[in-house]
Every structure is written in C-alpha cells, then in structure tokens.
Image 1 (cartoon, rainbow, N blue to C red):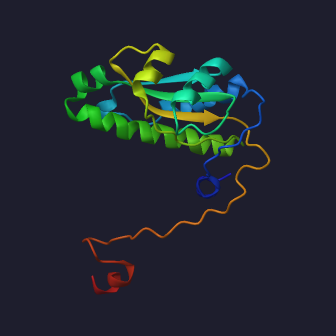
Image 2: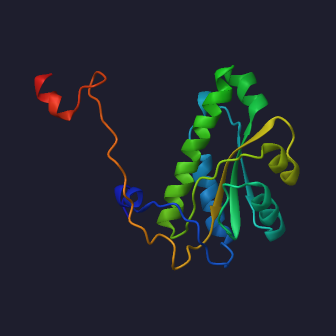
Length: 180
C-alpha cells in the first residue's frame, strides 16, 4: 500500500474487537514511534505498552477522552528533564510536538497493518501518573488505544472542511499564484 493511500484511509477508531494485539505488531508500532524525530536528536521519548485489562480499565475510569475499550494502549512518554537539560527551555514544547510526529507514525503504520487507533488527550495527568507509577519528570503525551477494529468501526465517511493553503504570504491563495 502506498503512503498516500494509507493517509487517506486513516480514521479514528473507537470500537475494537476484544482479541489481543499480537506482540510482533505492537513491536512494529513501537519501532514506528522510535523512528520519529526529536529535537537535536535527543532520546527523550519513551514508549509504554499496556495490555493488562485492569490497568486499561483504571485509565479509562479517570480519562474521559478514552472512550474506547481496546485490548492495548500505546503510551508516548517524554523525559521532560532530559528534554530541557539537553535541548533548552524549548525542549518542553518541542518534545510535545515530537510526540505528535511519533503518534502519526504509529497511526499510519497501524492503518497499514489493519489495526485501529486514535489520539487520546490526557486530562488527569496526576491519576495517570499514579496508575502507571511514573516519576515526576516523565510526562504522558499521548495515549493511543490499539486493536483490531470492530466491524462497526470506520463506517462514517470522513467529511472535512478544506483548510486554506496560503502561498508566500498570508491571504494569497492558489488562484493568486498566477499573479506571483
């Protein structure tokens, strides 16, 4: 499958089969996350796989954004202390951006592998930190449910408004290109 086709097929998945995700597929998703860039190539990103139903259930109870009941979670973590020490103050923000890149890598590979996922934001950081036994300098950036999509998943067609594309200056659109 070519990349443009995978991008076109990518959808948020909230309905999963209860079947476990094979370890080899989880390993491939972890490798996709690892291949994403980090500021100054500093290795502050970490990945956690959660496949214990009790831990997933605990996270679901405190995380309103996690609507799915997946067989696994892939959690993208940042060692914020390392990011700031090695990159500077900008490391705090750039590491969050880098986690988005890692998450997109995971999402695209999951799509190619026939798995479902989505981005889930963290609103209860203290609770997540307690459940996962994380030290203070580790930040949870993304929680991505992962599993085989249920037959009812992905039924909706994606309807998006077209985002404006500006050329060379704000407010100059594609039909203005001929004048440039």
